[in-house]
Length: 359
Ligand code: SF4
Image 1 (cartoon, rainbow, N blue to C red):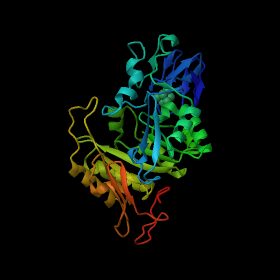
Image 2 (tube, rainbow, N blue to C red; image 1 turned 90 degrees about the vertical axis):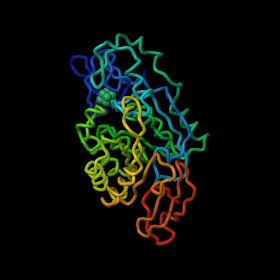
Image 3 (cartoon, helix red, strand yellow; image 1 turned 60 degrees about the vertical axis):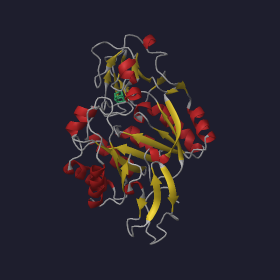
Image 4 (spheres, rainbow, N blue to C red; image 1 turned 30 degrees about the vertical axis):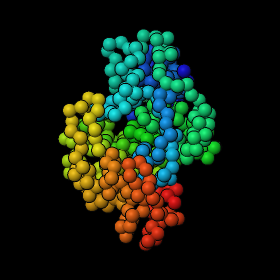
């Protein structure tokens, strides 16, 4: 096990983890709500520093990042564990693995700390391939990737592995990307921002009640994190999975769009199609008309770039000049078919296009 960052040992042997806004008070021999941070002897350890459960070379568009080195590839890694418990999680087998499979007393259930009978019952049980930060960077370089993406589950809960890898990646000229739910505390975010180039942050709802009931989190810290990532110079794009009957009302989409606009009119907003998953198998797939309306709502709010996601072939998969309307980056699915941007600007009218490494 690797010692965790961002915790305080309390007098009664508990530790206070301050990595994310859950601020878990974790008794000796127990784990926090993410189920992968463990108190042994008043010290906090991460159970996922040295193993990844998934790694793939993918288009950066799949993160999704549409204004960050378009057409490049991201070496993508993730571990088990998450600090949310979204009922619609597409990756629940790995995000919730530690909560579902590692031994615990019957009373343990996120977001309350999970109690473990003994460390020996945890060791060797965390799934994944053994890795080191050096090995991840070497693999990314060998794959010809432009960046490393910390993704699939919530990278905040494998912060130590991500941060150490990101430092080495920077030294080797690689970029670093967080694909995140935004539920991270201020100091870890500030430290991370020093080595982070881009983040796609989920803004799942604009309702604290929905965050609490559906994802076991809270709204306000996520809004704070999105603002702070942007303020600290990390390239930010925001994604909302539009779920019928949950967050697809005109008002909620308008609230999200106006918030994104308040962060910056340059922040791209992705509105993605929902497919039934995990505990929400009875919820319908998002109609394409709803996504098209969400794009209009984003544009009415003043956003320069709004994209439909998970709908290959839609007009709003591509980037259009916000001034003259010319087609700039033509996409189909996650593939870039053509990129006409020159020196960061529209070749037809010269309008500057927001983003990093656009061409
Ligand atoms: S959920 Fe995990 S990362 Fe968040 S405070 Fe609790 S132990 Fe720390």
